[in-house]
Length: 290
Image 1 (cartoon, rainbow, N blue to C red):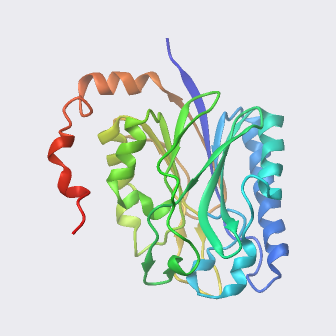
Image 2 (cartoon, rainbow, N blue to C red; image 1 turned 60 degrees about the vertical axis):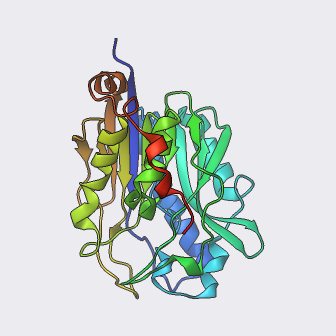
């Protein structure tokens, strides 16, 4: 009997100038997302994920301390509380990527995970922090994640979270599979000319190697004054065979909805026994200190 979960992904363009006050930027982006969250709820989405640092611009395009004001506590900050209300209203589990403050001066690129009854389940902190041209200066803003690779048992599925640059590293993707993730969400902010040729390659490969579904989310448009490139959208779901089953356009705000049959996970793993045939005792070089 099929075990269907309706997943949703939100991709958005920046709604307001980066020259506006930070609180105004946050409110504008949250308001914009709320409209798409309500659309998702009305369409029966059961698990919904938004893009990396969803309530602002991709401010890592420059190195300025003013953007530290974007931080919030998780789960005690206002955005987590607001999203808990929407999760409960629509009986929809949610992945909410935010700029997290642990203590003053200690900040992470994180995502809160909320269950369909509004209960806060925990958070993931991005592990791999880039410092890459043409304007991904993340080490200025974020400490590397220190909470491991947790999975979260939502009402509808067991999920994992991997954030943007993490997707270039197969090790964490494998850990999420071994821990039972059925869907892995990767909220991102990535531009054409840098990563687009990898966008539909790496994450379907993770899905195949680990036998799970992947939801890949990217933002949309260019963001003045930095204009580091076009955030090319194209958010998608792919299945454990690596096939893209639903995908957004590259140039518009959009909610992607897909019905995912989780029974496919067992079907695929029964054919490709990658977990059975692993040889972890032979991989010691991967974790040995130089």
